[in-house]
Structure formats: C-alpha cells, structure tokens
Image (cartoon, rainbow, N blue to C red; front, side, top):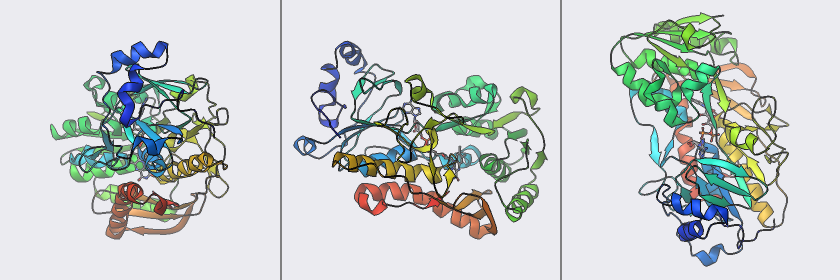
Length: 432
Ligand SMILES: Cc1cc2nc3c(=O)[nH]c(=O)nc-3n(C[C@H](O)[C@H](O)[C@H](O)COP(=O)(O)OP(=O)(O)OC[C@H]3O[C@@H](n4cnc5c(N)ncnc54)[C@H](O)[C@@H]3O)c2cc1C
C-alpha cells in the first residue's frame, strides 16, 4: 500500500483542527465553517511520531462492524471513525429498549467508552459524500477527510416499503422523529417506548422475520395491556426449523400475540392499529457508496470481493450490513450482527497486511447458531449448518434465553477485548 501523509490527511486526534483549517483547497473554507459543528473527542494517546508511515484509514459508521475494524486496526494505522452519534447503539437490543425503556447505548469515548484507550479518533459527524478519485469523505458539516483505505460500515435500517422506509428514516435521528405518527421502527425504539408507556392500545408488528418476532414477543411480555398482532406475508421465522418455529409460535401465542401469516401489507396505512411497528425488511445504507459509483448488487448492498473490497474500488472495504459479502462455506451472508463483527475484524486484518506490503485475506466465515429472544424468560437457539440453513436441533426456554443474553453481551465484550488485545480476536464465530 502506498500512502502519502502529506497529501492524504485523515483528521487525526493530535492534528484534527490543524488538518481542518489547512484543508484541501476548496474544502478548506467549508471545513473551517464546520469546525464549530463537528466535535472530535480526542482518544489517541500514542505519540504522533509513532504514527508516521502508517496508512490513514477512515471508518464510516461506529456500529458493530465499524468498531470491530477500528479497534483491531489501531496499532497498524491512523484510524478515524466518522459517526454522528457519541454513543454506540447495541442495535440487537433495540426491541428491549422499545418494550422496557432501558437505554441500550454506551459511550464511545470518555470514561468507560468503547473507544477509550483504543488510539482511535472519532469525528462526530455524518458522512455526506465520498470522492473515490480524490480519496476523501466529506461530512454534512463540510469537513473533508482524506484516506488511504476507507472502511464503509454504515449498516442498515428497518424498512421494506416506501412508507416503512420513511418510518425508519435514513438515520436513527429520523426514526426518532415524532413526525411519523403511529408508525415506528426499531431505530426509533425510544419513541416507541414512550408510545407504549402512554397507555394500552393495539400494536401491529409487521414482518415475521427474527426482528419482528423478537419485537412482538418483547412488547407482549413487557408492555402490559397492549394487544399485539404479528403480521407476516410468509410463515413466521421462515429460516427456522419446524421445531424452532413451533416453539416460537407457542411462546408468542402464550403471550397473547395474534399471529397472522399470509397477511400481505402494502404499507402502514394498510394496518388497523394504534401503533404499527415496521420490521418487514432491513434496507442497507448503501446510498452514499452508490452515489460515489461503488458497484451495488441485486440485494441493494455494495458488491465486494472475497476480501470485502468494493469490486469497483478496491481501496474501499465494505463491512457489515452494507456489504454483499459471501464466503465458500456460508454463501451469501445475511445482514446480521453475527457476520458484521467478523467482517470488521477481517477487513482490519487485510488492511494491516496491505500496510506491510502483503495481500488482503479472504473472509473466512460460517454460521453456527441463530439466537432469538422471546421476551426475557424464553428464547430459541437454532443450530444451523455453515450456510445458515437450520438443523432440526434447537434449544428452547430459559436456557435459550440465557444463551442469547450471553451472545448479546459477548459483542460488547469482544469490542472491549479488541482494544486491550487486538490479536486475541483473530476469529469470531458466527453467533447471532
Ligand atoms: C431489533 C433488532 C434485533 C436484532 N437482533 C439481531 C440478532 O439477534 N442477531 C444478529 O445477528 N443480528 C441482529 N440484528 C441485526 C443487527 O443489528 C445488524 O445486522 C447489525 O447492527 C449490523 O451491524 P453494522 O455495523 O453493519 O451496522 P449498524 O450496527 O447499523 O451500525 C451502523 C452505524 O453507521 C452509522 N451511520 C449511518 N449512516 C451514517 C453516515 N452517513 N455517516 C456516518 N455514520 C453513519 C450509524 O449511526 C451506526 O452507528 C438485529 C437488528 C434489530 C433492529
């Protein structure tokens, strides 16, 4: 990898403001204006001299995949994470927040922050444009960040129809907006919780995939007085074994959820309920890359090679839900935290290898289990083949709920471990 720090300034902790004002030509003025808008907590503690000669890596998105890549790379590169949030959202707990109200975010920087001590800079801003030719990212505030390698980890949002996508919005902030009335998504979990807490009513969860199932079960168990329906075009949990599906059905029914399979919904207006929770599909946040000319595949995700590099722009690694990744053992990967963390780690290893003059390493990943929470007291651990197809074997009940909780906890534990011992997280199993 060739990198020229003089011309490719990622904004780094030690010289972030300098880089901003000395910005690249036309970007300089905008960058200066934006200096007040974007805040850059300084987490890097290593001497700047130690960074000389290291590549600049900009990571877009501080979700599971982006953080895994950033912390794993920190010793090999000057890493800058760009994300508008100052907190990491444990997205796989958003149904818990919706039903129970507990905040499921954690600080990124400062005391107890996931990035604290990692030697990673965080630019608190939304990425607005990519220029792959110039190798720059411009934030909404107008700051311009140069990179040698970009890690694109912008994740996804819950959507599925124009209306559903509108409810999910293009960001968590929009998902939180009150303007979307009775329509909710997981991304707006805090607003949904306020609605549920405001008093009993009817709730329709649209989408019988794992997110919809978890949401319906959690609301039925914890948000007392609400009458919950789960609407699904297909059978619920289509990727589960017969035993797994039958357990999910039994638990939902016991919690009072009315399951309506074969119920096709065109949009939220089609649903008669006080609150509609849209969980019909996950839409990848691929627009930023697509606008910049990165190839998109038929699933709407950014097309990548076996080492997770954009097939059209190999200096851009795409990880997590935004990537249309595939491995020989697993085939095409579904969107999920289970694959997002290993993808982040794999991209980091490849970039580190490139910085030493080596070649990127193909992603090695296969699935082991799917874990589904069914409220706080029950769950399902579905054993799967390496390609994610279900085996008949499944663990249910409280043991499964406990196992699921451990898997969820392990995501944050793994990120924290990677800060202290990056090499300890070489391989991450496909649990999720
Ligand atoms: C309720 C629920 C339960 C789930 N349960 C499971 C489960 O049990 N197992 C499982 O495997 N998966 C589960 N998932 C899916 C899982 O959450 C996602 O697959 C996972 O979060 C993907 O990780 P990611 O890093 O790709 O993206 P994300 O976690 O979505 O992170 C993306 C980051 O990008 C940031 N971002 C977005 N746009 C911009 C921008 N323009 N500029 C800068 N930053 C930006 C966001 O702020 C966010 O921090 C669940 C999802 C939901 C909603």
